[in-house]
Image (cartoon, rainbow, N blue to C red; front, side, top):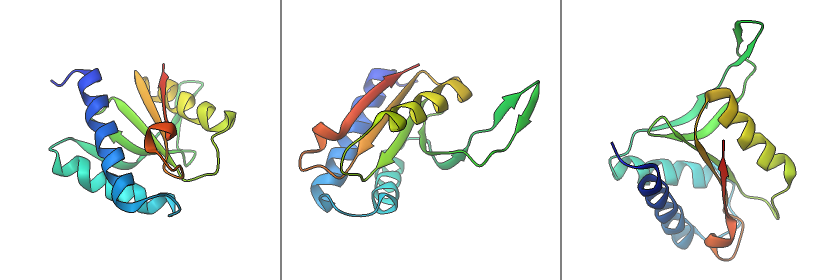
Length: 124
């Protein structure tokens, strides 16, 4: 099994590659499709639009929440293409981490001139 740090490095490298090829200014869905393709090509297990239920009073409820990309069943990727990230974006990732009991998430904003400035790590 690949270590979480190695997995994170691989994903960040792939996100940078996608950003270099496409540049900023596209819809989030374009980056999602391309990153999904690249990560699958790298041989990683990737799920797109992974439903995440909410557990309330011992009942699992499907409330329509979906993780943009889930890599190797443990790394949550939330993709954005926005002018700037705000607190609600971080809260969204943290909620997904808690609901799914995942250890780590990456908030990736592709609407930046340099991709490294659009990457935020969020730990559960």
